[in-house]
Image 1 (cartoon, rainbow, N blue to C red):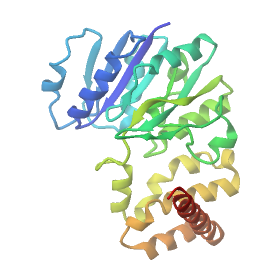
Image 2: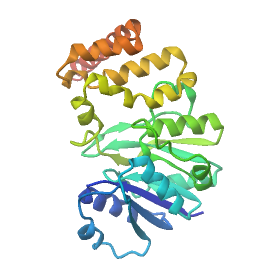
Image 3: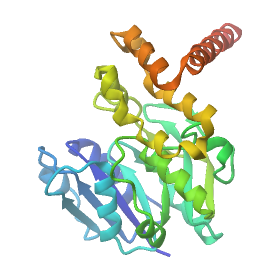
Image 4: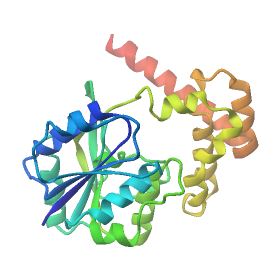
Length: 289
């Protein structure tokens, strides 16, 4: 069994150096490492010159098409039995591929895994599921981003990443794999480091958006409306519209947009849930102190 690693990158050579080092430090070594640069304006020559390894292939896209376009190219260029994905800003722990390999030897078709927050390693995110479930998926992506995901190459060739989606690409892939009925396994221990809230990350971009621009971020939810059912569909839409609300300047406009798209009831429920979570956090803090 061979692993191909696909790393997508865009204007972050310093991050790429760290992610590449983490791949080369794996106990289970991959057959190849394919770096797909989504047409960066920044040069990667200095970073790439530090790695003298024939397994590393650097491919620069002629035009920027987004992360899913880059991932699909990486899959097409790969030759391993399994393709494991890594975003340039995340880091695998040395045991990462060990655990994925174990699941494929047991018959898995696709695998997701838990993680720690890079720089705050005491913060752990894992899902207790042993297999990816609808119960978790209808609540959103309660597993991991694509740095914790791998799948059989043949499966990814047959059902590539949806290049039309602006966000939610990971969740969309997980839902489609679940609906296909493949053996989709969750490793419920943290085996990689996720870089939370980059300055150029999703949260920062959403905070700068205007309410009327939010529609392009709702594509994955609309695509899987039937899978979600009306309750969870409206809840997901509302959560995406009101994401990071406290950091937005025109809060009332965003709340109006949530009511317009998801409805009054879903919007009220969003604030009710947020209030309960805040109260729970405060009580936990007081108990600990």
